[in-house]
Image (cartoon, rainbow, N blue to C red; front, top):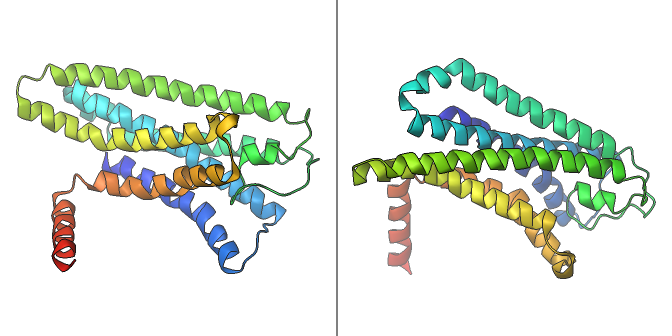
Length: 254
């Protein structure tokens, strides 16, 4: 799990570093421009880290499933070599997915100008600038990626159904609590990631507005990756003790 947490932390760091520095630069220098190559690089990196995170969260779900439902086979099914192969597959799949989307998106002719209604380069906003018939190829590619991520989601749901069934069969309350506590951080990160991402891309047009689009994009591209390390770290007893001490000092002061 710690090996996969390291990989997840790298994707979160990469996702934030892809969008935030340029947004800060534009804010400090009061500009709203990005070069064509810079936009392509930003789109590639963002889709790369986002896709890799989906695959890593799916693998981490499998790790929880094996550790709780098949603990005696954990060393066999999730040895160091198997973990390395699964992590490499996640990074390679994210890279291939990002390469296909970036190459296809930037091969489209832009017929509606070059002004994006977003603080970073994102596929849906670029498609709005392309010709009405030329972006159908990218729509099919997006549907393929959506089906792939939906398969990951179905796998996660099925795995957690099996996990909860196994946990509820544990006779001791302490054992059930310990098993649930190992799953809660992953569930919290997964829920935050999926809810913000789904709402950002599938929200009804009737409630869409530039300010809401900006707020939701910041939520799933910046806030969610920034909170992931904190959520997983809350199981660390030393960190929880330090947070309690900090909160105590804060309330005593104010």
